[in-house]
Amino acid sequence: QQQVKQSPQSLIVQKGGISIINCAYENTAFDYFPWYQQFPGKGPALLIAIRPDVSEKKEGRFTISFNKSAKQFSLHIMDSQPGDSATYFCAAPGTGANNLFFGTGTRLTVIP
Amino acid sequence: DAGVIQSPRHEVTEMGQEVTLRCKPISGHNSLFWYRQTMMRGLELLIYFNNNVPIDDSGMPEDRFSAKMPNASFSTLKIQPSEPRDSAVYFCASSLTRNIQYFGAGTRLSVL
Image (cartoon, rainbow over all chains, first blue to last red; front, side, top):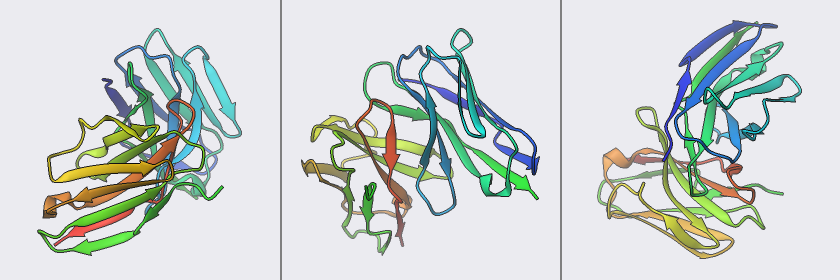
C-alpha cells in the first residue's frame, strides 16, 4: 500500500510565474513516480516521471524535484502559461505490485 | 499509436440495468488497469491485470462489479445491477514499463 498527500488543492498563478505542487509519500518505493495532467473531460495524461535515485528531472518547462530522505517530490512549472491550466496529479508506486497511488490533485489556474 | 481506447464515452442508464464498459489497451502493453474517478474519492484503482490475469481486485467496490480480460487487446468492466452511486468517470489505463501508465479518455457513467 501507499499513502500520497498532495498540496495545494488549488493554485492561481500569473502568466510567466512559477507553479509549484508538492507531494509526500509514506512507504519507500523504487519505481517511477509519475505526474499526470488532466484537462476537463479528458483522461489523465502522463506529463513527466522520475525514479527515486534521481534528484531532479527536467523536460521543457516542467521539472520534478525528488527528496528521497524526506519522502517528498514536487513539480515545478516554469513560465506558466494559460494553456497549463489543468488539474495535476502526482502518483507514487506501491511497495510490491505494479500499481500507482494517486494524490488528490491540484487545480492550477494560470491568469493571463 | 492510437492510445488506450474506451467505449462508450458516455453512458446513461437507469438503476438496476447492466452496464458494460470496454477498453482496448495500447498494443504490446502487458498490464491493464481500471480506475474510477469522482469528486469525493478522486482516482481509485478498481482492478488490474498483468498478462490478462487479474492481479489485484481489492478495489472493486462489491460483487456487482466484475472485470474480464479475455485477450491482450480487450477488457470489460461490468456493473450489474447498476446503482446511482456508481455514477462516475471510469478510466482504463495500460502499461508496459512498471508504473508508467497511459490512460484512455474515460467513460462518463450516469445512473438515474
